[in-house]
Length: 144
Image (cartoon, rainbow, N blue to C red; front, side):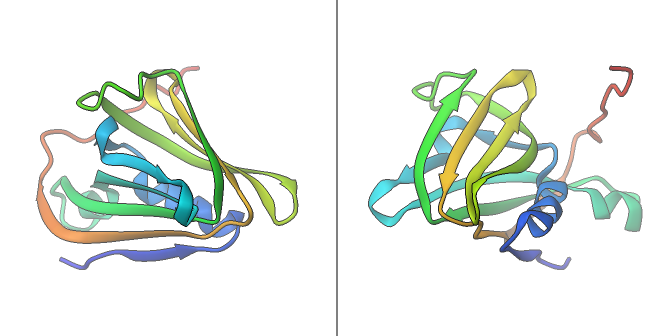
């Protein structure tokens, strides 16, 4: 299996990263903000959508997602102290405030989110090698 490695330097790139992490699951304790380094990082189990299309087998892969140039991080809709809590990542979006600065938002199922005030977009996603069969293919209700 090929390991994914992506870098995002603008909103279009970030959309590609967002598509790759859609339906990833993670523990609340597997993300954090290193204020002194201006870095926010998370470890996640991403659903590899290309595995379903290419091989017909659903696969999850352990991956790391990192954002640099982060001035502040805010959570909403979940308890950041519930370290064993599980979140499902739906999308990563960007709203520009004062170019190239803006807010990167990690949107989770159930309405939770993490908002990152960034000086500019610089995100890196890379697989860490571990891969396993997924129990199910995520499904989305598109009736809304």
